[in-house]
Image 1 (cartoon, helix red, strand yellow):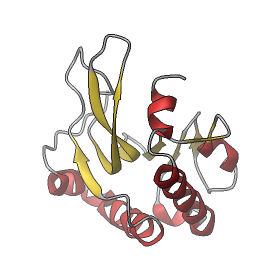
Image 2: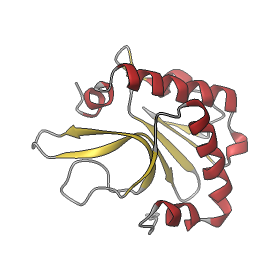
Image 3: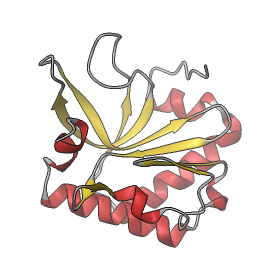
Length: 155
């Protein structure tokens, strides 16, 4: 399993020098279209706690609880280094469906999941479509801060 052993935002950005440019370019794009979603380092959650253990760059933040009653902070948009690509996770929905799925095949993505997509290089992305996606995510979160909570809790 690929693991990023960073413990700060700067260490995360520096972890893979070959992809630092891609992370920086993606950051500039997110900030330009969704400035209210502030960047932070997501440490990952400890074993047994709510959330995923992977470290990532987060944009925006909300808190959600799982059935056990434990809760955690989680990013509205998360950007994670994987072994062969960069993944972008989005935690908002539109009309009850994951918002990312509406953009399948339109982002220049290498892979598409339920509410995430992956790419190898920033230059592979269709930046106009990605910009529209991130602006939509920010707008949904601003209008309804509990939207990602409902998504993460499966309700």
